[in-house]
Structure formats: structure tokens, C-alpha cells
Length: 382
Image 1 (tube, rainbow, N blue to C red):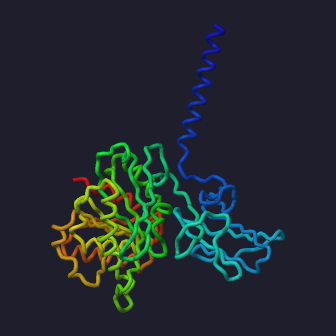
Image 2: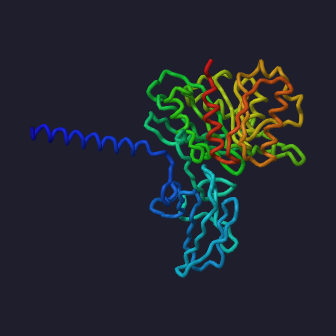
Image 3: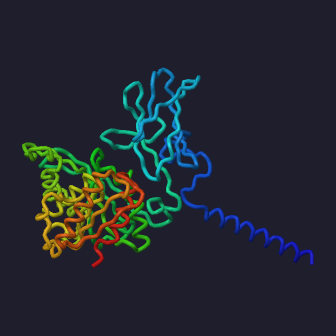
């Protein structure tokens, strides 16, 4: 009888432990219940620290400084304590990835407690505010692909260039299989590292492919700038939207190089192009100029130019398998209307397209991560 009692008690303890473990596993992803160092901090650094209400405490040790200001999109003057530590607490932040800098005695610098990211035209700091219950851009227990650095010589620019190439987990295990390719561009003030680091493109694709939501594909992340000697830029205030040099480099050098070094399916039906903000304008410009190279075009917070509606005839329906445009609901009025006006042109002209709006996001990386999650599953399915 005593043995049976002991067995029952042990079983009850095991069930209780398993129940507790289940409860621990079911804790919402990204939930902050106490002040927590940001995941973007340098190893061992306590600050910046995210509070449960998603406000953030920033500290910097600068005892000799006269003034220190946090620039987090909005500027926050910091206060110095007796130990020379400057501190400020921001307002609650929306989930996602946010660049920030410190302005120390008038000089903008990165926070030594943060990892560095190339954005806003400089190496700067950033903070990742977690989104409760969302893990599509986080590493999961699935097969993981790789992002490979690919150097190549450009005759057009007379320089060595670097692009990054995501290959799916199965790529090296299937040496006879060929893959479709998505060319994906960064935004203004960023570079070819943007999608690989800030965008977490590998995690997004790993999770989509493992869930059989997207077909295995390569992603090519190149710089959306190409200084071609003697190349003429368009005159006038919209010259920033002249992508002729990027067009030449992509069509004449980048795509042939990728097709020669990777096992691609080297035809238009297995190529797509997209990008965010400036990269979205690049994608529409290059994609529409080369229907012989691309069957899919996307733009995340960046689109075609609505000023010339005749440039988007209904005949595009016969040329492309997918045209995708997207924006965040909280973008600036100018950026939001730029995208939605272009959508209206396509609708008026009878051009088939998919429109996606990321709710609650502005002109920032959570918006574009969501856009990639929506766009990639639509590619190469037929």
C-alpha cells in the first residue's frame, strides 16, 4: 500500500512539473513583464532597457560632456547625475526596429552600448522593440538557410562590389536542384546589409519555407547604388529617381553573375524583384524596363510613378504574373499617398495587382518584414 502511495505521489509531481513546463512554454513571445535589456545591446550592456509599457531607459557614461540628447526620431534631452551618467526615458515605442543616435555636445554619434547598423546614411544604433505573440521574423526550430557574402567585379563601375545571397536550408543537400530568385533592394540611407541584418530576411524565409508557405528560393541583396563613370543622371528635382545605372548593373552584370555562380532557374518566370522605400522605386523601374527578365514585381513603401498613368497600361496583365504594392497604415501622409495614388492608377487602368497595408506601422522595418512575409508566398507557385 505504501509503495502504491509513493508511486501515485511521484506521478502527481511529474504531472505538476509537466503542467508548469507547459505554462512556461506558452508564455507569449515578446512579452516584457519587467525592465529588460534590449536584444540589440552589446553583450553585457544593461542599457538601453525596455520597460513593460515599451518605454525605454537610455544611459550613457559621458562625464565631460556639456549636453547629451537622445535622437530616437524624436529628440529627448538627457539629464546627468552626480556620477556623470546621462539618462532619459522615452515615451512608449511601437514594436519594431528603430534607429537612434546620441548627440553629444552637438556631434551625432552611435551609442557604445548598442550594436551598430548602417542606416540613415551612417553607422548608428538601433533598438528592437518586441511584438507580443509574433515570431515570423525570429529564429525558430526549423531548418536554417544561409546568407552568403558574394564579391564580384563590376566593369560598369570599375570596382569590386559585394552582395548578399540567401540560400535555403536544402540548397547544399540537393546539388542537382535549381532555384528561383528574388532580387530585393534596401531603402535610402541603407545598403546591401539591410535585409540581411535589420530585415531578418533569412529568418522570415526559413520559417515560410519550413511551413510550406513559400517555395525554396534564393534572395539576392545588392546595393541600390551604382556609380557608372560618365553615366548621365536626369536633370531636375526628381533626378534621385533616375535608376539607369542600377538598371544597367542589375541587368548586365548582377543577374548574369548570380546565374553563373548559383544554381538558378535562369528565366523570367523564375525571377522576381522588390525592395523597400527607395528600393521599391528601383524594383518598379528595373522590373518594368525588363519584362524579359522578371515576371514578378513588388514595392514595399515604394512604387511606380503615378504622374504618368499612361506608363501603366492594362497590357501589363499579359506581361507579369504578379504586381504587388504595399504601405504601412501609419506612414507619413506624403509616403502613404504616393503608394495609394499609384494603386489608384493601376485600378483605373485595369491593371491587376495585390495591395497590402501593414496596420499600425510607419516607414520602418516591421512594416517591411511584414511585406516580405506577404509577398514571398505569392512567388513561383505556378
